Length: 236
Picture 1: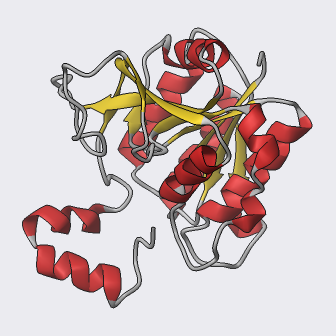
Picture 2: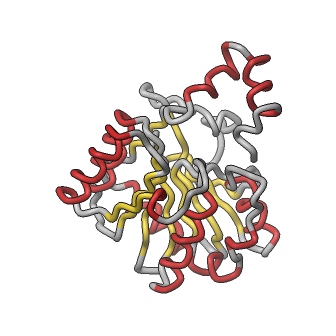
């Protein structure tokens, strides 16, 4: 694999989005970069439109192609898969609350190309003090550098290989869900691929920046689960 498409779904969270874009566009390697603006507010949309011209990324405003309310992760993934398949490229998903390092993309590409039978490969997420944080709290500092894992890989910073993309059609993703990292991770393994977490490859994660209500999971669990189950938010 010598080609890669990188995407970032954006729903406001302007401060972290700015950091994400700056980090990706400053990477040591350069590949086509798409941002899917999923019905963000006017301030975020205005910034993205101006930044797209200055930084050279491709901006897709979801409001131009669908009237389905946010989140539109399935549609973003379907469009991205099509672009990747057309170019025989891998698909790298970096979310808008993640800040990669200059060599993160280059190293992920290296691991995807050198690890046998790789379906997905991800960087581990850390806080500002470089301590492993959500969603990889289960990872220990004693774990190996390259973890062949049956745990789901979050899409914080995860590369899907062309071989896997050719075998699994994202049109099969359920309409009843909002997020698909768990299902896609399991599908990769079900198809006979291996998923890897690189514990030495660390990216800054500022969780739930685009969905601040999710912090209620820690401060007010009753309200969080009310919103999750009765308001049908965050369907995984």
